[in-house]
Image (cartoon, helix red, strand yellow):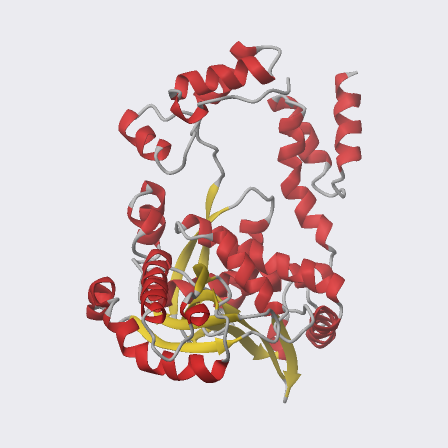
Length: 438
């Protein structure tokens, strides 16, 4: 049924569910039952979840798993991952174990600077605006003192504010481009509060500026907002070993494997169609840990993909080489993360995830997340250049197919035995199910 609704947000949760069920389902009672079966029986916990967003109906569950054996800078981690895609956690765990005996992951935080901008229109020239900005810059900082007080005590705060002239790209368009250090918080609310105060101070000071004409005094604030592009909030993750040390059960010729691996990465560096899928594999690992730790995976995704295209062409985030008999695989990735504030202090499972990781600082979490992304990428490229991606993935996907067809325990046993040595495909599994049921 196609119809609008008035006052939906004012309805109770029960009433919202009833409206949805009766409006969009032929069997409203069944729809209500499904939605309500995912409510938490602990009413206090359910209320907490209800208040995370607006118009809450129920909880949407995703599996939370663990990838153990991550040796990062000599310390072992069991990494929590929240994701629905088959084989991702298994691949990360396998890559972690592989590198745990080959020196582990080395990670380094290269920078932690975050960015926010006040976008405004000024009907005048940069020659008049620049001296005005230089004069009011101390006032911009002073007027945010109440906002920055606690952050300054933790060693963070506003790093700098610049005036940027963008009028060649858009008539009368200028920016206040501000950089921030937010320590262990992601800092979105802090940054946005500072920016809105900058905008207020800028507008008020301009209206009183005697060197401006009446038109120039009327600065238009378009918006004040942080940027999720953080090219100076970057962490490096890397692994390396002698080429011959790459040998294992499925790598009997480590030199050939290393050379093919480097070729695969090089293709992702030069071919955009491959680079997108290549980087998606990295994000399988990154997003899963970002979700588990209560961070904003959409912001991370946007920033990472912009970073991958920072030189004008979308390219691989990771790189590989063989030099003097040493295989090296590494990645620089921008990650604006937090371990305090937001869901990190509210969601019970986020608290558990951070506890498992040893209550990391934001910089430590950046390193763990980057190592997981690199591990995921290594696992994917290893599969692609050896057995192919589908062998392991489809074996993990087998359970999903069996659940889809509501296979009985006996059917599962027969099917698992059949595909122990056979390639799993959706069509082959369905055909076997149909054969068994005949």
